[in-house]
Amino acid sequence: MLYGNNIKIRILKSRLLYILVCVLSGVTAIPLLAILGEVLIKGWKQLGWSFITEATPNAYKAMMAASAGEAIPGGIANGIIGTFLMLLLAAVVAIPVGILCGICLSEYRKSWFAVLVSYLTDLLQGTPSIIIGIITYIWVVVPMKGYSAIAGSVALFIMMLPLIIRSTEETMKVLPETLKEAGLALGGSYWRVMLKVMVPSALGSIFTGILLAISRVVGETAPLMFTALGGAAISWNMTKPMSAVPLLIWEFFNDPNLQSLIWGASLFLLTFVLCLNLLAKRIAKKWKI
Image (cartoon, rainbow, N blue to C red; front, side):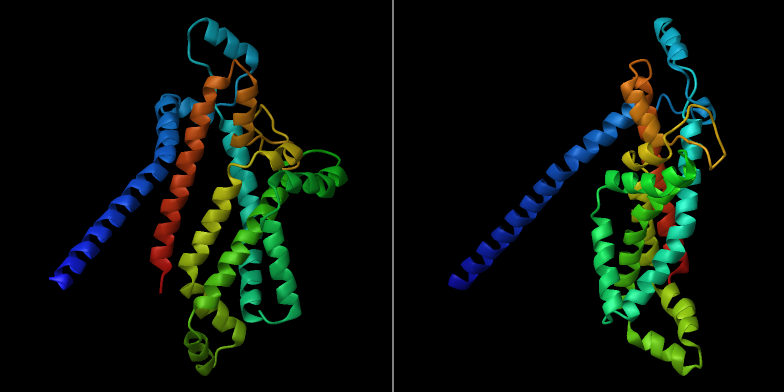
């Protein structure tokens, strides 16, 4: 009888704990769902061909359209182009540098140099984005004597690098040593084994780290305010000031005539991050060994 009562008590505790976990998970998801719902409801009507192919209108055009009860003309094409160009330049540099640095930290983890670099990586990862923007302003904007998309890319590169380094390092540490031993036993050189055997085996986690890095910087505004500055016209010149979607959202917020465009721009950012997630998972699944 006592044994049966203990079983019933354990089952009851298990069910109560399961219900508690479900309730807490639902409570955690409420803010996220509320934000997504608000952005989706107010932003989906603005998304259209003109919204992603036309530059941001000036305040006068927006005011005239609002007074006439019409939709605000123009879109965020200048911000989309600037965001993609700066992200592309930052990623082209940050991805190979971060992966190679992560490999070195995992292989030579006991050396004093690896310990120092690992500490600096953690320190850089915790640095506020506005501080990175100020430092980039001093390092790049002042010597170039002007704001530019290159300076914005440097700021994004600095923010992306520690995440890629850390994800690569931790992934390489958990790979079995037998993979490396097998490659070396077959006559492969050390770095050939690392790049042809070890790195492909860790592509899934490495791409996850790259995704997290891009997702972190794609919505950053503060460092771009000190570097890229922004611009109303569509520009492809990386040596000149260039806009970005986060910068446009900040500008829309400060202009009462353009505030309605905030929701469309925000929805575009959320959609972009979702596409990155889907693409990263597909690539990781395809290249997984």
